[in-house]
Length: 387
Image (cartoon, rainbow, N blue to C red; front, top):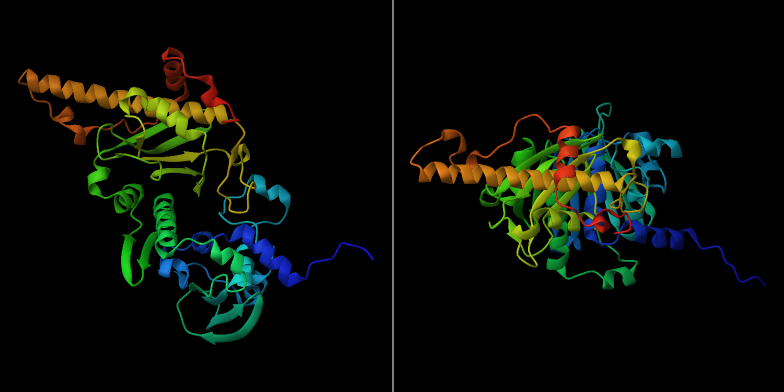
């Protein structure tokens, strides 16, 4: 008798779900990204007991059509991808068609949704990979998804969750990053009945202030630079202020509207600051990068947080030069202000740190090239793709 057995579908689904749904924060990420892809302008996130008891995401997006509702809960069902070639130009955050099916496999889920063409909202309730009930109700256009009883049938995964405060911290960090990476969307985030964040969707500055607070925001410098087809905007910390902290938890990287992690960027940032940082301190930094879609590969891992760049050296050069250039301009502005004060003169244009700003024009490729040519020699290992 053969030794190879074909796994039961319920077993396979639970195993596959573990690749996408690692913890409560994974569920929040998948649900919020679906809301963003649905064109929502308002998203409300509610969690209880670190997401172990309840996760609920409400949006005013386009909703899910009645004919698509059950299909959306099946594995590899998506409206965002038709064939593999679409990956090179895909602009949506989701595309694998795994999120809802994975959540259904390891929890209890209720979906309440309505499109502009529906007379009533459609409701589906499921648990452990099975649909338990379908009904209708009332609500405005959009979707509400509530997840409870997480990992009830996957005890191995449940045992490896952090305590409630630890899982809550993971979700709060994720939500803060989602707010900053989607500054034109209004977010409300509630934990155990208490409002933590309320961002009104008034743009990048308002989103960063909501998360960082005014005191830290006042110690951030705007950056903007362009190199070839890569564009970078964002904020970096002023040295020797409260925007320099003891960890990297507030270093946020965004590419084409997608949050991503990349360990090779941190050494580039540290090198650009050079002697301006004390040992074991790190700047708060937000980098919003725009590149051609065919220059990156987003189909690397199920959680979609790893992104591969076809030209990592170009990315590192852009980050390094923009940070270094910004700090030099800030220091020159500050020194000029000090000289004005010492000489008894006044200059309203360079009066204090608060008046520091850049030209509205993004610096061009030739400026960056000249900067890099005349700058100090950088450790080339920093720009090795294997870092």
